[in-house]
Length: 266
Length: 266
Image 1 (spheres, rainbow over the protein chains, first blue to last red):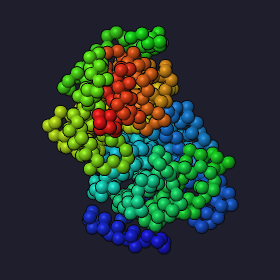
Image 2: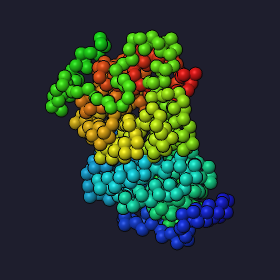
Image 3: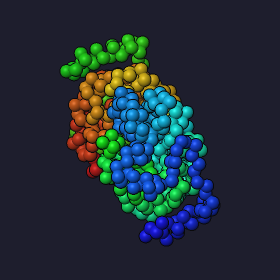
Image 4: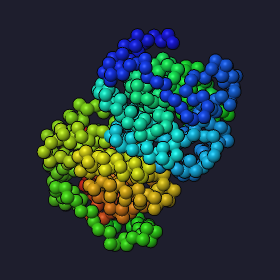
């Protein structure tokens, strides 16, 4: 990984390690109990296959997503059926729809991901932790939480670290941390990824889809450089077609959050 | 109240009363323990005074608001100081900032309002209730929750009623129900207000400020006609100057949620 910001990454990693009394080299990689190879980047061969249009590889990277305020139960049911038919990796829904999604998916090999503190990330830490625990109890096997951007920008790193840690502990399942790249400087993106790694997150994720912009290949490359190969990187927000999906995967993403999964495979 | 939709209001009220086994005429008005006259409409004299530019009356209707993802602690502190100086009714903040707001306001007569399930309203009911309880414990004396719009549109009225009831019970303080008017038909707006009243809410509120549109005078007039004089009506989203504020108050609002409070009084 020869990213132009590698020196900055090393510097911020060490600084945060000292602040939080964490050895940056000794953080265990997240251990998934979920099926399949979730966290390494796609292999070079898989990328070649994807570029040649291998829909199997592409489908397994997609979190099939509906998160809007006015989402109807029937739309969630339909989303789950589409995910089963197309063998998407997961569906991604709001908390109130986790039981319905779990019931609809049944025994099929599709995960249910639930968003937490979404999309503002400004809920109290205790409320985020409770919400994560509730969603896991209701059947979510992945939790997509929003980082507290305001506290990150104010350099309240211990509070941000504790916020993520509390959710990781309460969830008991893989946690993705949405850092909302559109609102961050490069240094803030790096700090967000380091804090997520230190706190035991399974993934870092670019965007909620509710802010001013979504995923970019530049951000995916930066985030991959920060977290290395032991965490996942999820590109989300504005990824709507095959070419954009492929660009994200080539830049280092191994999961795509999108409401356009059918179009991407089509 | 001679609203053109009065027959529809009566019909929906009776229908939901039967469904929920509630006598529509026997719902007790919300009893506030907060200082001042919060829930009646402004008196005719107060409206005349406001129209003549009485800033005292206007200030007492304003929830001084900052809810964006990237809100900094220093901005929240500043918001609270402005609220004290200008004698706004309340500040309105996200959950993670309730302790800071409460500390900054100290003994001053400014309430702290916290948003719940915000802005999508799609959190699980248990998570909304926990978040409300947490915010009240942290010092919030008002709770602004978002209704579950998806379930409302799917006519799952019992679930929507139970969602609001759970928050009202857990909060133990005045609850405002944000119905997100921009996404609703007139019939859905009426049902949302009826369910809020039945469930013991103190206020109905138009908008989160994060959807496609905010408050309109037509919606304020409709909401006031549904809830009568014993609940509050809060206009929020896009209210940015004196004339807009006055128009909302004349239409029946008795609280204004805005981030432009200083400009409105200026």
